[in-house]
Image (cartoon, rainbow, N blue to C red):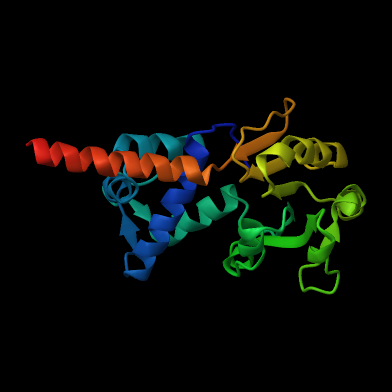
Length: 214
């Protein structure tokens, strides 16, 4: 039985570890040490070992970790062997880009339908069909969908979130520029692209000013 751990900080790091290990594999590495993984991800070797130990992953002090075995273990923890069906609400620029992003399926993520309130965007014959928003509840229940993506304007995001949860969605990735509220036991991850860009701009300016002062 898969071991799940409710750790909001260490689980995202597992994805970073996996991506680093895939790069090491492409470079021909058979074994790696926690120090090598840590340097690739930007954490300490102790943090790597601690994260792995939480999920029962152990290495060899002298020989490190076998790359292939470690990748398999992380794939199992992250449930990468399954196909996860996802719906998306909001067929604007971001929503359209996500629907057309072909690498999702390679990672076991399949957007199976989109929804929108704009009649001009409805197209049931698409490879990934676009339905009116009023079809959301029936589609989610009929297809037992558990994960949704929100790419609607901020003013509509909480209403869409509530509809998703009422329909049976358990987890949401939210691209609307607002922090959504949800009941206990449900999962919402907020992705604020503008905020992230503002942070990048600030620190670029700050570092340039620091260099200028020095």
